[in-house]
Length: 293
Image (cartoon, rainbow, N blue to C red; front, side, top):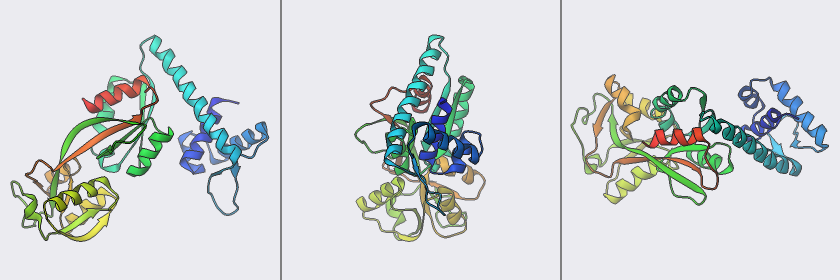
């Protein structure tokens, strides 16, 4: 049995999809199925439940045990490789990072490029997800690092903070607020608003600020995707409060008007999450340092 087979199995469990597991490991779906059957035959245990007509990946009790121990073996193998690289001072390996779209699309690309330039033997494996899943994947060890907005302290997690950025108001180019040098929270009273969905941390922060300042706005739409919100504002649904890095390019292109919000409370914290009980790989430490510098 090869270490790669264990990785295929754990990837299948974590991604819950044969096609994605095959893609991640550069093999065919048939090869994934064959490797799973080979594991089951070797240990004489059914590891996955098969439900006819469905593609769900469900672990049997034996599969739960096998998955947990396979993760431990893979972690030990990664540690072995990291230890050997450290002997010669070489920074390499793959850092698995999960992040939300608003951060990953607009704030991480330049950092990833800088990291790859400094450490060409290392790789950043970046995937996008919702905040709750990012936190879950860090806690379960699916990824080594998570990067989210408005991180909340949680037992078992360490948070390293990146530089804060501002939240700004975005409007259509022909809106009455377009071109203003700044606005105060009270100026937004009664405005038509395009929001993030209620469980998104940035939405929670905006709702809290409005409540604390006694401001009520009219909700016209809710979306979970920052690009959809930008498009809705662009075509005239209403206005929105978004992180400045995510709208600066659209502002320069004239697709949106970006208006600063005056008060100090219009800031967004961004944090890098990792397990408190695990030592980060040397490559992960360097990436965290780059993000938080």
